[in-house]
Every structure is written in C-alpha cells, then in structure tokens.
Image 1 (cartoon, rainbow, N blue to C red):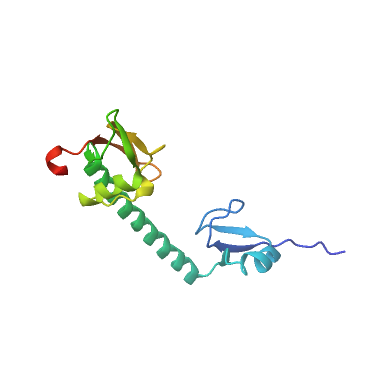
Image 2: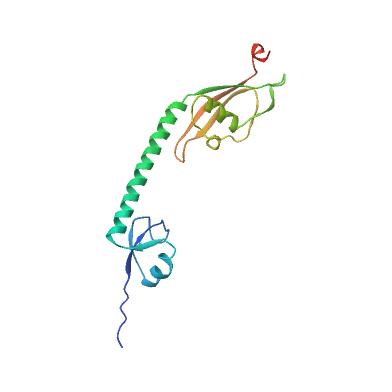
Length: 161
C-alpha cells in the first residue's frame, strides 16, 4: 500500500480571517479547503507574483490612508482641545430648558465655527436639559477623545427683542 502524501497549497489571504491570519499573509491550507471555500468566497487567491504585488499596493494605499486620517484627527483634536462653546436657550425661572440640547445642536454649533464634527462623535449620555456648564466628550476615533466645555445660557434680553 502506498502512503498518501498530504500536500498543502500556499494561498494569499485577501481578507482577515481569525483562523488563518490577516490580509496579505501567505498561509498553507489543504487543497480542498482552498478550492471549495477560500477561492469561491474571495477570502484568498493562489500565490502569484501579480497577486503579491496587488496586495502590497493595497497595503501601502491603506497605510497612507490611515496616516492621513490620523493627521486629520490630530489636527481636529488640537482645534477642539480647550474649546468653549456657548449656546443660548430659553429656560424657566428654575433653570430648566424649554426643550433640550442634544448632540445635533452641539454639532451644529461646531459646524458654525467651521469645525467638521459629526453628531455621532459627540458622546452625550442624555440631552442637556438645564442651564449650566457641561464638559462634553467628543470621540474623534476609537483611540482619541477630547472634552469641550458647553455653556448653556439664557438669551440676553437685547437679543430676544
């Protein structure tokens, strides 16, 4: 009886896979697994010089994009650090607002100052419903957050007339 030789094939991963590795890695897998699952689902491709070059270009492009995004986040963090924002809202004599100030209102006020902050980046636990001074966290990305100070005051009597 002839012993069966188990041969693996080398494939280039096109997607992250928790069991195999990350994008761009060359891994050994069984031929049937590659032929029946990895190739048809676009998870991997055969190792060829062209495929290696394509993945390397994609890696470089992604690296540049991440660096550019990190630079933009750092610039925005510098602009937002220590920022104080004043919002005028009508309130009762006890200081309760007639309505509330939410993330959308804060994002709009930042937009008026030419700062591009999406309302989803503003991490309010609940809308602000009273006059006062609040420290509001702004999540710029998964790793960076800054706090801005939001003052909610009543409109001055001259402005309301």
